[in-house]
Image (cartoon, rainbow, N blue to C red; front, side):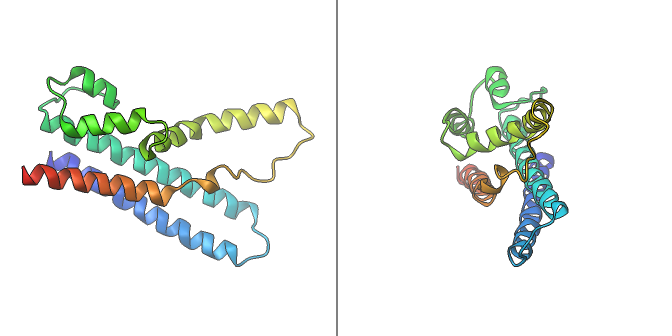
Length: 167
């Protein structure tokens, strides 16, 4: 478990570093009258990188929970873990509820991550179907509550770890 715990912590740390860099870049950009294309691209890349690190931290945490339940087979999602583990832990049940609630931070985080790969396909097809239209900027990622998701994931992991230590 120590291996997965360290990996989860590392991914959360990397997400925090990316968020700090993103905040600094946004502050620098807000002082400018015009933001160039490379700054916008860098902001979008950082946002997607934060999403990626948060998803990796979540998946790593699922492996922590699998080891607690003494499940050591390969799996790629919470539903696969729940289908194969002998007894689901309270932590797994809590995560399942968050994943199935479309309004929860975890469900929204996962949905945003899935849309990252789909966004490129949509943008390409738009360009081919109407070449006279120019997309100035993609504002969908600017409204993502990345900091909130980071705090929610970190808080949940810390709370569940502390509860396990007390019992």
